[in-house]
Amino acid sequence: MKICGLSTRETVDAAVGAGADAVGFVLAQGSPRTVDVATAAELAARVPEGVETVGVFRGQPVGEVVAAARAAGLATVQLHGDESPADVAAVRDAGFRVVRAVSAESWSREAPEERAAYGEDLLLLDAVEPGAGAAFDTSHLAAATPDRDWVLAGGLRPDTVAALVADLRPWGVDVSSGVESSRGVKDVALVREFVAAARA
Image (tube, rainbow, N blue to C red; front, side, top):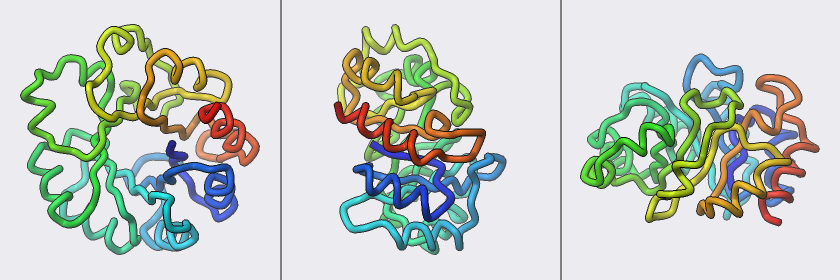
């Protein structure tokens, strides 16, 4: 499970201490959770071995993505825009694991050959507007979940994650706004509650 959009030492330590498998830093512009490369590097350096560090990018040039992820010392790149299969391949060739994030709605319209062309390491299915904290109708996913490891995101909260995990059986879950006291501000208690609920 990934706690995403972290921006302070306290919240990184809380996520790791609660048992998160991965922590995410937003390096895309336009989010209240965006951090600069130097901050991402400082925070990633606090993360112990065995916990994955992920940089979240959206619609940025591949060269910029690779340079930022490398400078921040991250292991994984999450592409959350309209990146192409060639973009995914370029990031992987640069030595990073790649999470392809796409709305569940868009994924449901992709043909099998389109899905296969991306070649990402992990698929993340989200709401139409990522980071907005809005839950989405998962009924179509219940009928046709991905036949591979995938991560559920989009409006998850400590009080809803357990039921969704039970219904959809994703490989993992990803939360950002659902553990915030206000937009962009993580709440340590909610981080701990979310991890405990998801694991339960």
